[in-house]
Amino acid sequence: MRVYNTLTQSKVEFIPREEGKVSIYVCGPTVYNYIHIGNARCYLSFDVIKRYLKFKGFDVYHVQNFTDVDDKIINQAKKEGIPASEVAEKYSQGFIEDSKALKFDPPDIRPKATEHIPEMIEMIQGLIDKGFAYVEDGDVYFEVGKFDEYGKLSHRKLDEMEAGARVEVDERKRNPFDFALWKKAKEGEPSWSSPWGDGRPGWHIECSAMSLKYLGRSFDIHGGGQDLIFPHHENELAQAECYTAESPFVRYWLHNGFVTLTGDKMAKSVGNVVLLKDVIKKYDPMVVRMLFLTTHYRSPIDFSEEKLKESTRSYERLNNLVGNIDRVLKKREEKVSRLEPGRDVIVLKAFIENGEPEFVEAMDDDFNAPDALGGLFKAARDINTYLASYDEFSLDELDMLQDIKELFIRLGGAVGLEFTSFLSPEDVDEEWQEERRAVMLSGLAKFAGVNVKDAGVLFKRDFPSFVKKFVDLRAAKRAEKEWQTADTIRAFLDSQDILLEDTAAGTLVRIRRLIV
Ligand SMILES: [Zn+2]
Image (cartoon, rainbow, N blue to C red; front, side):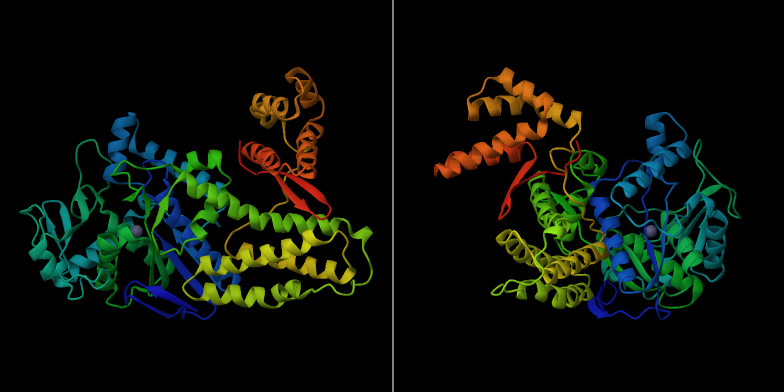
């Protein structure tokens, strides 16, 4: 298996510290707001990586922190008029809820920065003792000039950075890139006592202290968004390697790409954020997962409503296959015991034999999920065509279909995709119907020429029969070769989240799994 390591800027063979075990640290959220789609991409990318490592048989230990003390939290507390600790608690809970909705495999531990102040103080003191940090009037700074390799992760050179820098001169710092390990307390802000007076830790030292505590030295994977490479991860690395006098702090640095919105990076500071919780009110979380899976985790994604709709269709394509196979398997009693001569089952056999090796080959190449899913999409297309061509299947075919279904579910699960059978018109609840009532009644009135009142009676009494009216009407138009009207009816139903699929056994009706 090969992974792209930001430190070497190349794809390298993945060899964990301990055979069969993988330790991962992913920088968690600074809890001062709900997460946006850009943040969600980071956690989703590492959820996919973690799940795939588990699929490969690794025993994974995953640590993801909460940064629950920070300037941004303090500012938000002033805005909301509540204590900083309440802000942190509120948005930590919000993050856990969002994570559950997106079905992230939860970390083994979620350490909070505020519960690890002693570990941070110990590390800062160690850095002072070894001459890598200095105290300046209650603040403590890391002295970047003392670490020869500073800049090795982000591939910058300190002297070039200094020449190009337009940072404000801070009299207290020996170098403009020196960064705070400890910040002197200010009036009304949370603080802890320390050998240098009351204060609070800097952001970077939190992650170094917590990752070393829970994962030990030279752990396997450190993850985060590309925007964290500098300064956050550069500084984490400098602190940790100077403190432990051991290199590497991390064996593989993995970073996911940005999410942009009409070309600009999505960021709270830019003000162009789309909150995850708002997206999943409208779209199935599996659709959001699909959106990120169909682009390589290191490439940028431009987020749009159009992309979500596209991902809805992509997800439906895979989900449909599982639903279609289920439908065939349920009719086992109608089985034909022998394979009909002339049927070519190579399409089925090809996926059973090659589906997994091709999927694994793609994922082993730096988690290339778009390529891995490409194989599933192709198989779904071929197998769906096969299923739609016949209405009876032999026992051999049913056995193969059972294997295919299981393989689909297993490979989907390796990247966190879950498949469920589609809802049928019998399954939808009243609220769902009510939202579509007015449009659907006038639709039936228009296409079938019935009056809205009669349509309304049927809608209320028997929704599946009501939907069937459209299906029959479309079939009649097709029989009359009025293709355009038939297509218009189908598109109308699609706009109401009712999908039609023509198969050898007739037209299937399914309800799109959008959350309403
Ligand atoms: Zn971090």
